[in-house]
Image (cartoon, rainbow, N blue to C red):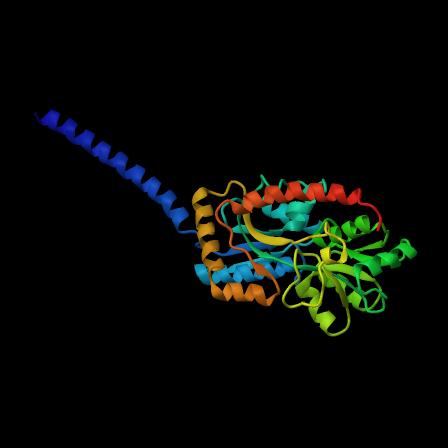
Length: 333
């Protein structure tokens, strides 16, 4: 009886120990995920400080830091039209502590233009949610005698390769000027820069004639009379620039570029962490403070439903490939 009782006790003890260990392991794993984030998080901004990417990244970092109560820092890794920073984020350890604020340039245009990129925007990231649409505008130095896109096209046509413009590689800024030239049937001189913050001074001084960039970067200079805004590249006029017509209004219906910026994590990030990231995204995008800050920059807030960003990313890459192909075949105007 004692031996039988002993064997039963041993079996029960072994079973209880097994359950305890299993519970401890499961609880430890769950605890690691449920405690995210329990240390500093960094957000990679793949453009220079002062760019639209940087503006959105810092806004998101501030909002997440307030929401989580942990430090969230922005790390600028500019170059190659945002591809350097995107690749860096794609290769980061997938634990949720390195994120990317990416945009149309390094997630859509780079893929659509068949750039030699070492990451797949649709496969190497988990799309958490977009944050903002950013209106872009065409602008020239005031010494350039053009007040509309048609007048700019006429000048460029009369002086092939003489008028210069800012390009930032395979970005919305560079692609917008390439599309304009293709659809207008003109040729301009590209002047390459690493980022918009280093390019704007050369346009303001008259060393470069034209550029295409986001409204927040250019409006203050236009208000000071140092730039002339020719057209908004979005589907409609924007409230802060009611007198600046759209590209469609000026006879370029296919010259519509409405870049967006969103939050992404490296592929392979645990599902539990992704869910916490999505919950945080939803919370900050519902915040009136965050939305007011986005609108103060001249941007439009986006509140994506789960999965909507990933769908938009795939659709936009396909659409951009179509637009790029059509632009190269557009007749001269």
